[in-house]
Image (cartoon, rainbow, N blue to C red):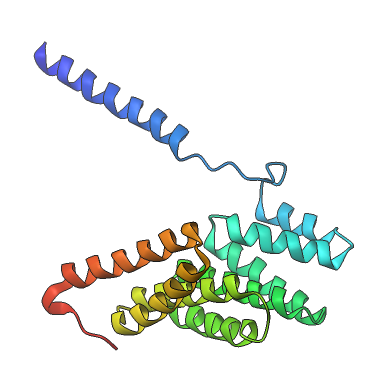
Length: 194
């Protein structure tokens, strides 16, 4: 009898945890009428104004949790911004592409895209996006365990955001610096910089 009660409680526990996690971690798309990647791509293709299509690609690429779809959208946004000769948007798309490639597991492609974004954005007036690229490059290098280089880029971003008194960006950058310090401490004798 006691074993049945324990089994029932365990079963009830897992059912409740499943319901709780489903509510807590359910993804609500900003574009809920687009259920699949094909529908999303078809919807974007049907937008005739290329500038509106580009803005929507950037917005979705920035918010979508599926790395592969984010890579595809960001890469398309790079090509569209390039064809429209929009350097700021191309830099933003390269940044999003770099983040998406990192999330998908291709660190080398991420670093390439982020360095290209920095090159483009340095000649524009979009300093916040530029220093977000520095932070993203630091995060990519952190994931390579190239901690010294990562710290350099993260500190460059942090200095700029402190000058601007941008508390949100300061918090995000400090979070990445703290994650790097935690990894360095946790890896201990295994730590080596590239």
